[in-house]
Image (cartoon, rainbow, N blue to C red; front, side):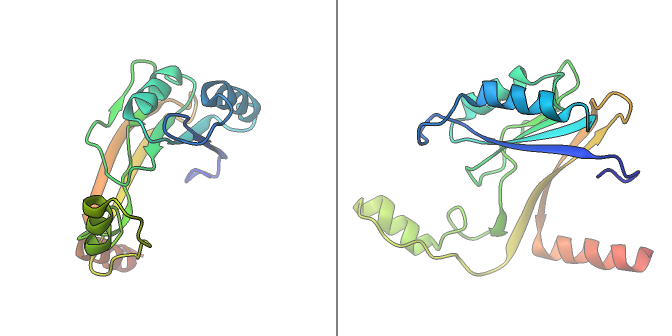
Length: 170
């Protein structure tokens, strides 16, 4: 829900490039948006996909249909946030929340072993200081169109400082 209590529609759809065979995500997301539209003006689409080209295509496909389209899956935040011409906030990949000194959250030693040897190795989550990758979108309540998008890439200490500030503001 929004700050004013209005419902928000959230859709997660998966891409097909380099992924297991799935239904056409472009058709599926149109159908789901049509089903949500009577209930929510603000609609967020999380597009879980490998290929940036497929994510960009989804952003343009949904421009004016969704409030926001964010890519996920690669764990690496992109710096291409924008409002598309018909009012959809777009970011190719939101990134990850997890250990910063890692290879997409995995211990560097294990990930490097896999790359260098070509042999499988069990992933282990890396330890250490984390980072928070996120995005903030402001939308027009009447139209559901995005009016602003801000990408966040915060260290653990920055998150702690914000949390402490938020607590003292109450």
